[in-house]
Length: 320
Image (cartoon, rainbow, N blue to C red; front, side, top):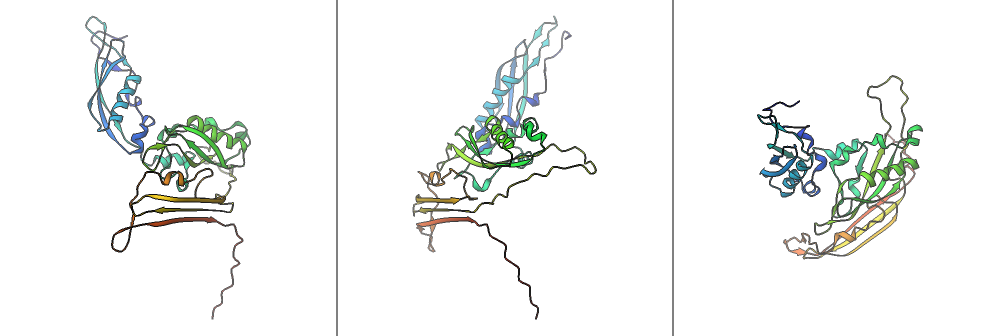
């Protein structure tokens, strides 16, 4: 029981009031970091009544998010006056907003990765660190777990202008319908992204090809002669195809006359995406220049082709 004269103390760990999972999407996208100092006014019931920023991080969204989160989550054990009556007070602390190092790599190790070679143009959606908190073990399909199935699910994930996953379709199957279905269900329920940017740098909807790797739980320590499951995976370029993109950039840096074609499978752009939709618009680019440094118009053409052929038969070498 609290005694007279005891000071007010936090009820819980203040480090949990704001985490990287709460990082504002725009700040994450623009790689803004900083430390926000704050002071809370606490009532006799132990609940925050007011939050004041005492030292700014230099970014309004980080400061605003700090106060919003601590007002929602901070709880205190009220202090006691000389008559043993509950009293409030003030509490000061700081929250340091730092983008996790290599969180994209950590996310890939956890099973989810984005195919950066085929992202929406000019910049596609990007996963947020909050996805590191997804417990894939809890979502492993029971039938696949019982059958000890593993595999890679290649998906086209649709993300709206607010960063919310609005759709998901399987591009290349893991060869397990249960794993395919579960991967898209997980993206729809727990996917967290920064939105794509259009040619003017404004948030827009986009589609990003991604891969989710289902792997069975491994024992913490190696066991001699333990039976290991081997995932049967489809080679990423196992179907022939080709893509071609051509765009005219005039001497003023404006893109126009853009054409895009696709035949069969391709490793350039995911199905349903036409890069010409985002590469033009009102956006102006730095124009090409001639040998005298004068702006000139140029046509840019990009082609990519996947061929499936029999290997060449090596000829025996002859030594003179």
